[in-house]
Image (cartoon, helix red, strand yellow):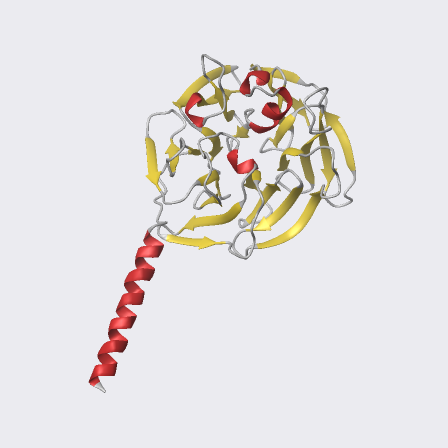
Length: 325
């Protein structure tokens, strides 16, 4: 009897050790800073955090490739895409073409993995307005816009589905704070010549859609009055009805990739608002040779709307997300 009891205790201890080691692999301490960003180059498996002034920079090691990190609405959790496959993860657009699963880091040393929902490729994730602390908007493989509960790991609603649309794809999206308006961009085709990008706005109650502009990666301001987006000449802003469109940050988006159309879709800046609506944070290619495929040649900037001034926050990083209040 004692022999069996000893064996049982040993097995339990072994399982506990293995389980603890497994879980500790994913422990991620969340620094008290504003910005999380994607920071890796080829073989690196890390995630970065930095304050808005570019002073306190923290790099956290992981044992998987973490793509498109974002804060939860309350700023207490991090969601990332754990990507599949053995591929050159140093490329800035890799998550848009490789699938994976959503991982949630919370309560200092806790994680959850949405193993029941495998995504084909995530071009963008963001908190879903102020609808619910556990909802995010996911652009999946450029074909779907999904409202997703990352605690229950289930799809709530599919706003856009292009599965039967063989010409273009989704290029960024954002929900208004009340969840009533979805703004998103569509490419007219996948061809490099004469490609066009249309920004649409959808009433999520009636599902009615109308075009309001041309560009990619639209993003609602916190007060739902303005939409920041990317045009060929840089980052622009317009009112929610498409009026009073203006250029605020000059940037040649055609340099980001040797293929004009696809590069504009995959490596352009993705403007994100600060919670007070006074700043935008985004990445840009800073390569002197204009070889803009890898994260190491991208830098993170912020733009102050009241003064029109741009500030460098960090060299070598992409896809920044500003923590909410």
